[in-house]
Amino acid sequence: MKREIRLSEKLLMGGFSFILLFMIVQDWIPLGSLNDIAAIAQDRTASEIVIITLIGAVQILILMGVVLFYMGRRYPVWIKLWLLIHPTFIFAGALMDWWIPYFFGYGAEVRVERYTLMFGNTHSFLPPMNGIVPNTLHIFFHSLLFLCIILIIYITLWNPKEKQSVETSGD
Image (cartoon, rainbow, N blue to C red; front, side, top):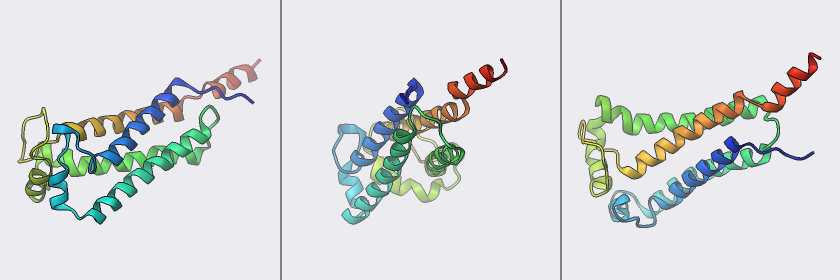
């Protein structure tokens, strides 16, 4: 049986690939004004950075593996749920760590000093609010993660094969 890989699945894999690249690169490789690895090294030990990198990368690799395995085929319900829930929890963490403190100030006071140390010399196009400024690299990551969640919703809710079989079964 030949797989018919949808554009949405290819876009999802592309999004996950960039997220994986972000997870691996952000704390290790200098990217000019997009990151400050010296500042991150002041805040965290090398072993902490390795653990954080591995946890993030492994999560994305598992998601990519699942999508690759089912790409072009019917996703079981439990896989659809997991593909939706897992990245949504990652995104919820980003909201709690960055966007809720930024927009509403909740938890900002405990993050300001640390975020200023780690991200104070990085590029950002947003104005400071509540002492926090999400940097450009994290804005890109969070936006891409949100786009991947939208693609997962699309992939899990719309399957052309299922729709086609429903239409032909009525004949």
